[in-house]
Length: 384
Image 1 (cartoon, rainbow, N blue to C red):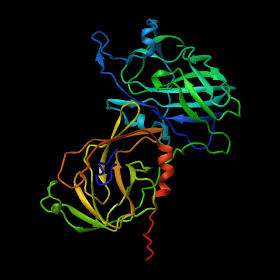
Image 2: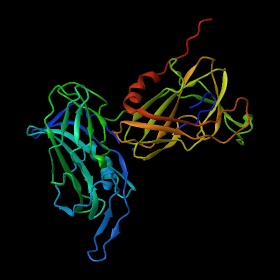
Image 3: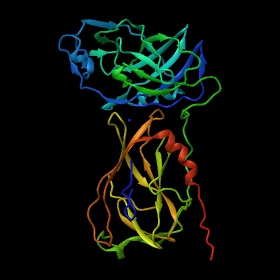
Image 4: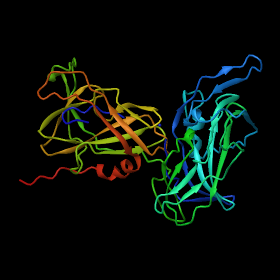
């Protein structure tokens, strides 16, 4: 976002699931909905009439020849409707991308990484789980807990899978049990789930770490008043632009500061905006997106109370700070970070015209959600 010209808008991944949960003597330490990955096109085998997908290459393709192993009867899971971890994988049917969810648990004296995979076809070829590089690193002590085995047994192999299209498979990687003192870890060696050094905060006991695995309520903002309606809008004629007053004022914070609210229907992003004059123009160039580490894009659908993709005036006082709020397609609860991309807008005629684009990479969703309190309405206070 730029002063005078705000070109607003905004898919790997993870968030904390709140408190550690125990179910059937299984302690859930962390869960992630995973990075969204492209699904290769399926082909139909002429002999068997089965659909076949040749999975995208991993780093291991250059190192290991296919083993000839074809797994059948891989354990599958049921997906209760209340389980937020599987919302996206269930809704991804028919899409060109799908998430790769995972859970880190304690079971029977071991730490187990469950890697979930929804079958995109009846047969998947050229798949990979892990090898001796699979490990959980304690970020505080530097102790590395190495992968012991997998279930089913596919350790150190490129393999194929036979199953039923749409089933969610449960691959397990077993590690030594992590001590109770371990809080911050990094998971390595599971490339298809983008666990290649991914930082993870474990949930222990009654302590809370990281971002809760819950939705926000839809944020409420003070609504500005439109005092001039755009007529025969022309970007090169500022007399045709709409005009507003009584914006949603906030306490002074650095211009461009963002906050985020996640709801099932939409993602809301508030951006702090500084007024340098009593009357100033702003706008949005359109086509701004949020993009996750897998390349999945989330489009901006709306700008609350202000025009979308046109220039407009705002009345206020020099020194005012106010919020402009963008509405994007919903983000998965389990994303850890996001990149904000606003493209350069079309040139227009005005003093100090500024329509330059901006890219903000690796924005922490946890921190963006913590910034919500910065955008509470703060009426202007003037001393004469």
